[in-house]
Length: 370
Image 1 (cartoon, rainbow, N blue to C red):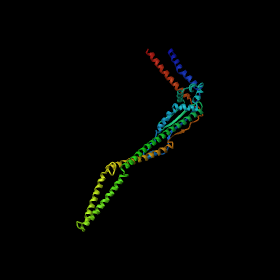
Image 2: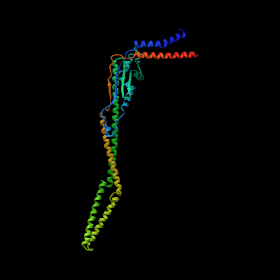
Image 3: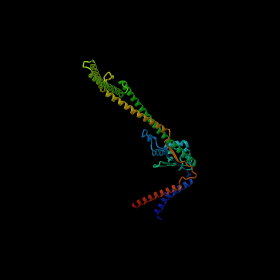
Image 4: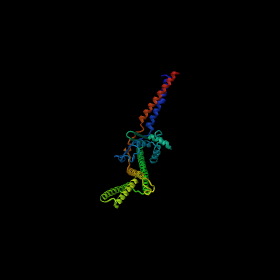
């Protein structure tokens, strides 16, 4: 073997063999056993059709979709707020820092900041999330099986509380929106009824349609009286002479009735100042009245729809539409599975070997070109 062969062998020992030996010694002699606890859960919706869909969209209280809730839950498990909450509940720093002197690689150093604890949280809590099904599986590592299960239970409990808070907020928003809509409709209904009352007070007409029917009745009565007067006048004309005073009286009666009919017909189109304070024409009054009645009826229908929406929102608020379904309760390990010593040693050895090979090839390539 030449000198360059010995140098290559020395570099292999320094860069590959020695680090692997140190790693193997540490993994099998120093590294502490870690236990895992697995929990699986998903966000579920209550079975059965939603009443809001049956009513036809009067009140859509649909919040976010289930997949969106699962996405929020996935991010929540990695959040700093959850880390801080579980630290206050179970004492993460106290547990993982106690093993710092024995296993400084896999344990947590003493007096870490919340950012350090959040970084370490991603090492000990591994989350698997299927976006299609919405299933979330959490694996927690700890130096004792009881602590791993305790942390997993705390994660499930906090996740359930978070979903409940989201549902409660959605219900409160739905109730608030329904109440606001109802209050607006009530104000509109008050204004519509007040406008109709003001019209009746101004025109002194309770119902123009009823008033019109009354005038039609008067017209019909006058027409009947005119027909009777004409018949009586014809009969009297056949049975008496022209100087009979009853003929003059009959003609006068016919003229008076005809004048009254003409005046009544004219009043259908125009009302005189004596009939109404403003002297408004009758068609305009009828058009105004019909517009006010339509506004009132439409507002009343909207009011009934708003009441139905409020009742629906109240009914949905009385039940929890979304909840956390735990399909795997936090497990209690009986044997240690971590750290995965053979996997870590094999990957590190492969990485070191590849790195040494690349460096060696680069070195000899440069040396041959020099």
